[in-house]
Image (cartoon, rainbow, N blue to C red; front, top):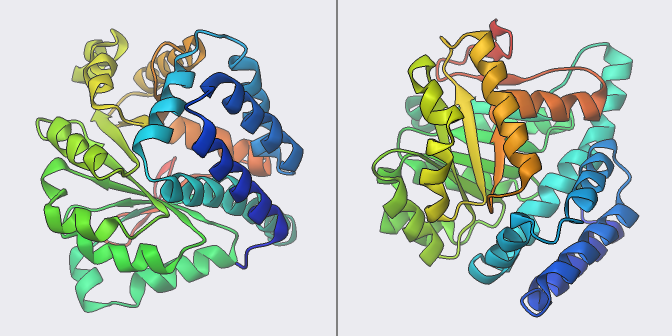
Length: 314
């Protein structure tokens, strides 16, 4: 996907805002949202930016602290590239392709693809994942969630090559090695999400020191209900300064618990008390999909190559 004039203008505005935001974070943030609405032609961005515009009327919003912190601590090339790939390539230009194909072919296409990386396939079939991405991009998909349990360095060339896409790389703290950090510094279209366990805090500090964009995540079970809904878990990750905090339900969780957790997530977002963006991977993915294409579709591939949707294994 070649850069067009709109993208160039948006990137320029973001870089200028990031440079000046420390002087007046509230005013510059509001100006950036207003500018985004001027360039926004997609249903999702318009919806999201209008919500952000409304929320930022609260002068005490913790999201101002988040924006100020990101501008001060994260490589501006990463913020710009990842943000524009997600908001413009994926949710604007890609969304148009998705809607056109859905209208013509009469099937649902997800706006984002979840991929659980198979280490053996990565090593023995080097063209498998690049081919998967090419096929997905032809459908208008430009956002990818990669779940990696093996050598995370091996997926970086794949991510870097697809420079028009936005990737969220789900890892564990022990995978954040000096070698990995040295290599990922050169990759500007990725955000790293660290699993919230005993290694999370030290891993996040390493990423922060390297000026990388990162999030944290937790896969919860029925036994975690009190820990999640009481706010204990969220409070425990705030000191690590993640840009996002993601929750995802274990496959064995009841629908009732999933709904309770998502209601809690949306309540936290609305209250704006925490300097991070709190999301439920399943329900927020579906929500975005409904806005983009009027349908509801969440698709991923497990390590064995089996297709999974939000309705289960296919």
